Image (cartoon, rainbow, N blue to C red; front, side, top):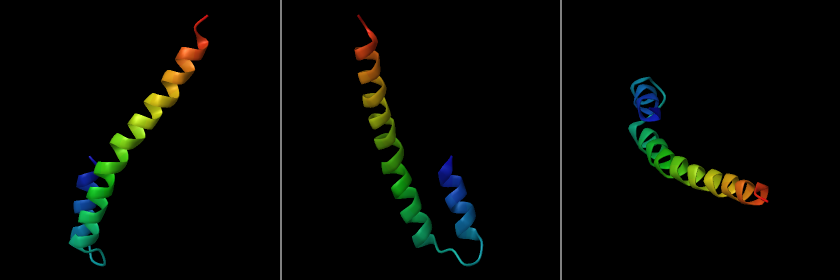
Length: 51
C-alpha cells in the first residue's frame, strides 16, 4: 500500500525515482521487522500473564 504512495510522490516534481525506490526498500524491511518485534513484545506479555 505504501508503495503506491512512493510511486505517487515519484511522479510529482521534486521527488526522484531513486528516492522512491529507497522508500520502497526501507518499507519492505521496516514492516516485517516491526511486526516481528511487536510479536516478541506481546508474546512476552502473554507468557507473563499466565499463572
